[in-house]
Image 1 (cartoon, rainbow, N blue to C red):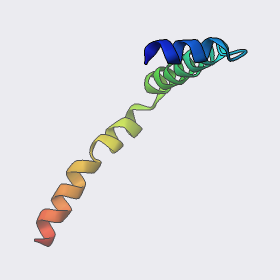
Image 2: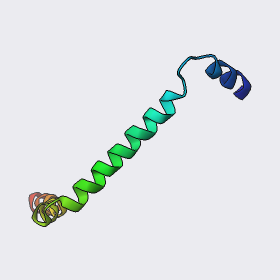
Image 3: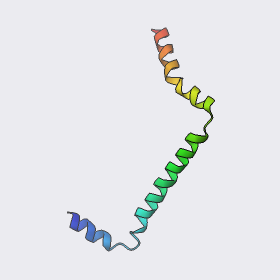
Length: 63
């Protein structure tokens, strides 16, 4: 099975660009994600981190 796939992929022109493109997209995504994490305001992070606790308290009050 692997020989069939490898032989088929070798016959496609420009197939080597797809792994490089996917690596580039992966790298850019995680660089942007790390940039956002380090530059996000502490107040926003605190507010978002408390959302599950607020929803849990509201559900307990309704019951």
